[in-house]
Image 1 (cartoon, rainbow, N blue to C red):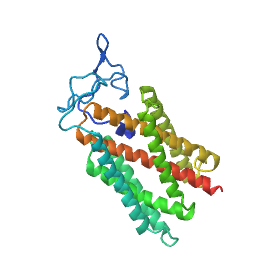
Image 2: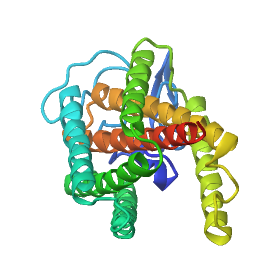
Image 3: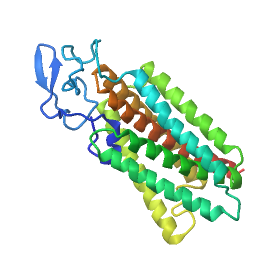
Image 4: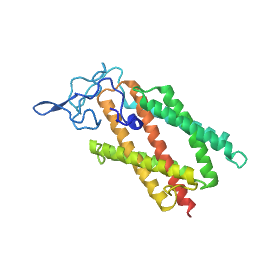
Length: 296
């Protein structure tokens, strides 16, 4: 179940059987799923993991099924996510402690942080283009992402707003818990319309940020002002909301993978997606809180 956009392909697990021509169970017969090739959230889609020899083969969409053997479980997702997030946290703490952001070393620390961020970006794109998760690649991404976050967080805490890092971490945890509760209670329903809206909004958001960065590089300052003042606050809130929506997509994919018997290795892909989403939310909180405290 991959998005057609490779940047967002982490939203779906890899599969050997394409959705093209997949069949969905319907009352009174079997019909072709009209959204099978374009949307992983189509109502009544067939089991996307039917080629997994351990996947359940005989139950209809959404029905409780007994699975066996090499299939993904919630414990697999939790353990892999803990490992991936733990790698981010450990490398972030180490980079905070070992790469001081005092005036004498600020340029060096920034260079290391930005370089690590670029490497993390490249690794995430490489994984997004791969059909199957590569644990070593995902953990390498997490390590470099942690270095980037550690340097940026230390700089923000030292020069912009002391204590903002702890607030951003608490905010990220609160969003995660809130979305998880809302999803489990059924207050958030991930449908094909929801999926399409979130992906379109995210692409637009990232394009605007890229344009703002381009203008900042050319003209200096904050470019078009999307990351400062009133506009910065508005876009910070939008970024957090988008991150929350991506969490809902992640939860849906994990739920589907467990229900339909995704291979156990796919739990690494779930961990990768959840980690990227949480990093997104943390960065948006860090930016938003920095603007708010900087205006005090």
